Figure 1 (tube, rainbow, N blue to C red):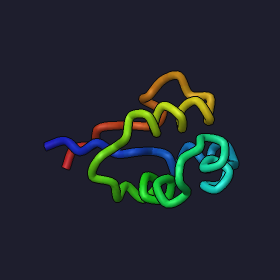
Figure 2: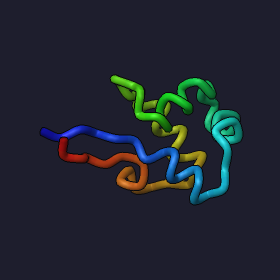
Figure 3: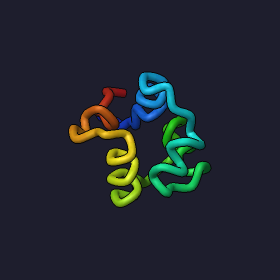
Length: 70
């Protein structure tokens, strides 16, 4: 079985950016960013992910999402 995970915590660390900075830049609630960093969301809002990717300068979604085997 596969699970989709969000690698946002790692991406923020690589870019030396805080959740709050990303929240402001992407216009996404900080609580939502925090939940994504902890992989606690059951559903992902595509519009939010697009804004997050744009704010981080990411054009390859593979930098943010990956499948992991359980």
